Image (cartoon, rainbow over all chains, first blue to last red; front, side, top):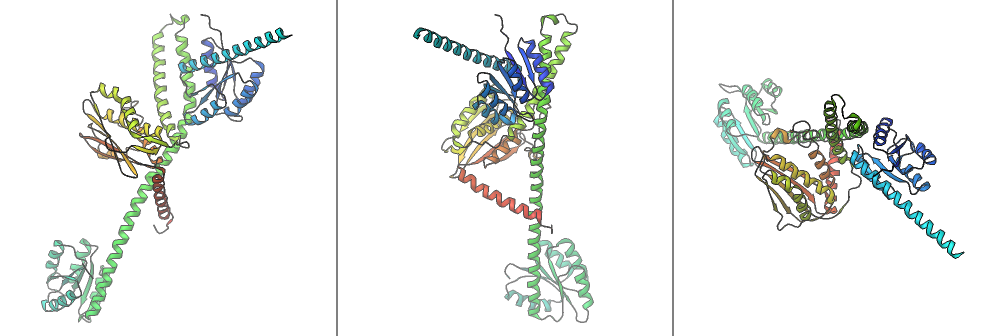
Length: 146
Length: 400
């Protein structure tokens, strides 16, 4: 089966982390974009059609939760996976209530990350599929009525 | 003047006899000695509160006897009796630690009054000493509590800071692992050496991660979730979870939950963590074979959850340090030394306490006492405030 690359945006103020993580994801066949702040993340989203955002919660300036709210407001079907420190699971739960797909504890396990990325991508695909079908139906109905 | 033991030391029995009689009527318990040697013998036999001591005696002089008493029985008060016109002896006595001196012939009421004062002084001294001991003990406890608290804050802060670089190391190692697995590297020179080294990095990351996560698990304090908790269910679950590991070492886990009401108002998740830790510890303490007994007892306001093992036991010197963070007897990499530290913190947060009894070679018993309800928890909270209050007073007292 040919893997369709997911467009993943990694957002973390730890530049070395972003670099290594994106190298690894690219190696596994994903299309990777990076940002080092919440603001840069939102800018990137205007330029690229991103599937999944991997978002660090603890960032200076606009933090992960704020960024998440903004993402969900502007691009509701973009999936977000939160990266959190162990002491901040409550924040992760809060984030999921705000619409994040899932969370991972830092330092995250590669396999778990792969699974969650896969899951998030799938959910977005399915959602898009439903939207497409609904659109088709509405077009057909409109066509039939007129 | 009940229970006051009074020792009369004078070489003249004619002087002692009437005095003894009259003092006895006042309710004192009277002992007698005709010389310094006799006085020593009597005092070695049993402690006395007050000695009435003649200065002028053949053999050991009163001053010598006084010196001996003050050296060996600091708590005993001494009243010196001097001949008239030899106040010098009395002054010398006071210098050496006597309570006071009276000149012969002694006015009886005056003597009784002096004895009363001496007893009063010795009582005050005893109280002061008790107080000082209590303060010293509290201060010791306070120091260790503060040390633990600041150690905790510091180490959790460090754990947070370490998690970030750790994430970078992990990503890098995983990236290398991924590259090594690629077809293009199938014939890479010394590939197995690289793989071995990456493997070591990965293991070390896991080890560091265990430490930081355990530390940070302790910080998660704001959202303690109280609910009706059935300890019977929790114990059954936890035992089942640990059963496999116990079985592999031939350990039998016995549950003794009969007759106790295990329903309490507390945080089930945290209690599960405590139970699981205690069971894991118990299993680790046993080489092979043996028994672990999990039992539950209760009163109206408290439950006592016990995990007892027939393992190697904990030496006395380690018992004191057992709740300190990073204290472990396991080899490096096996134990983080945080389990009991975290458990103790959680238990305190739930308003409870952990007691340990252990005998080397026989086994260890952990007893977790928890309040049955929040109200009971509140009682303990009040006591806590009281303790803090006392501690602050001691701390702020410039006299100490």
